Length: 274
Image (cartoon, rainbow, N blue to C red; front, side, top):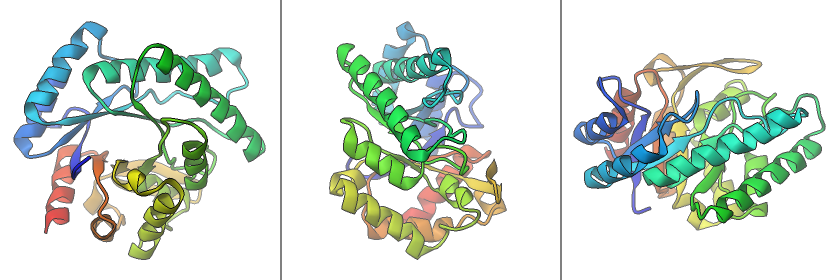
C-alpha cells in the first residue's frame, strides 16, 4: 500500500442504492476505501462480484471486508465451530472475487476457558481456514480483529502471535475497541505509539505498511464496549491517534465505523492531511 486511505464501513449514509452505488459515492466524497459489510451474512452473490471489482478499480477505491458477527472459533459445539470456519471462508471467497485484499472478523470468546487453550483452538481453526483458502486459490489476508470486551478473544498480544504463527494472517486493529476493552486506557499519543511500535517490533515494517484499521467513537464501561458513537460525541482521542499514524508513517486502510460513517471518515482524512 502506497498511502493511508480513509473509507466507510459499508454503504455511506448518503447512498440510496446498492453496494456499487456506495463505492461510487465514496469516490465522489473524496474517500479511498470501502468495507464490504457481511456482518449479518454474506450479502453479495458470486455472479455480482466481478461488477463490484470493476467499479472499485475504475473509481480507485480499495476494498476490505468484515465477516459475520456470529463467529466463534472457540465454540464447544462442533456445528457452530465449523459454521464459523465456513462463514470466514465464504466471506473471504466473495471478498476476494470483489477485489478486496483483506477480511476482518471477531474470532471468538474465552467462555471461562484458560486463555492458552483458547488460543490453540482458534489457531487450529485459522490453520484450517488457511488450507481451505489455498485449496480454492483465494489470496486474501485473514484479519482477526482486536475486540472491545475482555470476555472476547483478541487482545494485541494474541493477534500478533497468530500473525507470527500462521501464514497470511495479520491483525485488524480497532483502536476504539482497544480503548473500550481497557475501560478508557489506550487513548493518548504515547499509548497509541506503543501499539504501533509493538506491531513493528513483532511483525516488521511490512505490517505498518499494510494496516487494516477500524475507528469510531465508542461508549464503554468496566465490561468494555457498549456501542459506537460519532467521534465528536465520544472521548476518543482521534487527533493524537492520527498524529501517531503520521509519525510512524503507516500505510493501509482506516475504516470509519461511526454511525455517521462518511462524515467521520472525512473528518479523519481532513485532520490527517493538515
